[in-house]
Length: 68
Image (cartoon, rainbow, N blue to C red; front, side):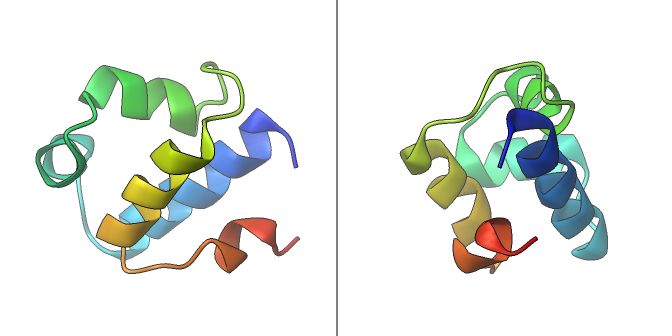
């Protein structure tokens, strides 16, 4: 899975949970600028730890990213 596909899945989850980038920033400690870059696929493929932090705060598991 490439960076853009991962970012799209994260964005869909965030919106589904009703969170803004700023709200997710507060939950994860990851700046909203970096979250935005991840969602747009502009940050490269995020490290697994970063993905896990984001997904944990979206109440999702890593498997959601692995599904196509």
